Amino acid sequence: MAFKNGKVKGMRQKKAEISILQFGTGRFLQAHVDLLLDEAAKSGQPVGKVCALQSSGQEEGRKRAEALNHQQAYPVRIEGFRNGQVIEELREVSIIDRALILADPMQWQEALTLVKGPVRTIISNTADRGYELFEDDHPDMLPPASFPAKLLLLLRARFAAGGAPLTILPCELINGNADLLKKIVIELGRAWHFADDLLAWISNGCVWANTLVDRIVSESLSPIGAVAEPYALWAIQEVPGLTLPCTHADIRVVKDLYPYEMLKLGVLNLSHTFLVDLWLRKGRPKSLTLVSQIIKDPDYFPVLQELLHDEVLPVLRELLPDQEPDLYMKTVIERFSNPFLKHRLADIAQNHEEKIRRRILMVREHSRRLFPDKATPLLDGCLR
Image 1 (cartoon, rainbow, N blue to C red):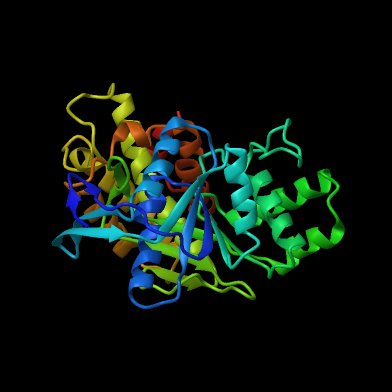
Image 2: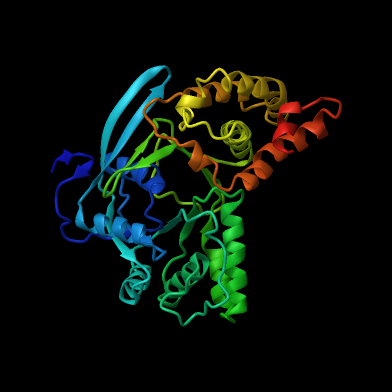
């Protein structure tokens, strides 16, 4: 097997035992969760294999699923800085055994069969609105359209087959993602008049763990693969009965995700949104298209520094006294300076108003509560 132009040669061989079902085939899962699972498996851990579930019927997703079925492995390029050192590495990820396109009724039936077997974990990373339900969904569909409805039917199939409870690890960038997803699934099960013993098994038997993922995956490779930065974090909240699919230096089991969520939202995500807001107000100058460009620009970076030092870090030091927000900020600036990643400002600008609310407004509200007499002109400027 060899890499050539970002591709991996080698046809898919016989199918293996599936221990993980994964909703999503996108570049983030490829270069973060799947990469960590793959590295753990190659270290000798009994991780098993992943079946990736392409939930939407979009053509791009279909092509990724077909590529995953065709190739034994795909490349992940790790490029950037770590502690001031340049990192350029090429990884070969072979943890995914197959991909199913769930819009195909036969492949949906295969997913229902797989979940009755040795599967232990369900992972998800769906779209921004992936938890939304659809009015036309019903339990006899093959399959229903929404992700929560598909998950509910998979869990019902597992329960009916007498399978052991599963661990569900959602990776969507939503605070309390597992708590919210569990609530939606249970409420949908009640609306569909599913049996109480099934719903009790889903709620109390299965393990739902909130998670936070942090890695910039800036670019897809064709037909499959991705480019990512060296920094990686998969934080998983400790809950009773939690069994991880693997252990890894970049996976942390923590009692409370709040400090990690606040650091990421208040420094990395807030900085992205603030820089993009300046960029939009300046008319999207064509000379600046990437984060690595804007972070060096004298019209932007000094303003970001002023914002972080004067208006953001005082809040985070007060909220998170044990988390060293100043050190995390230095790490973030190093990550933003990564010249290898095509981290596009236009991509970050998507859903900008919602990001302003969740990031900028959130920090300003904390600032007004903690320091009622302190001015926050730069935060206020984004909330015009």
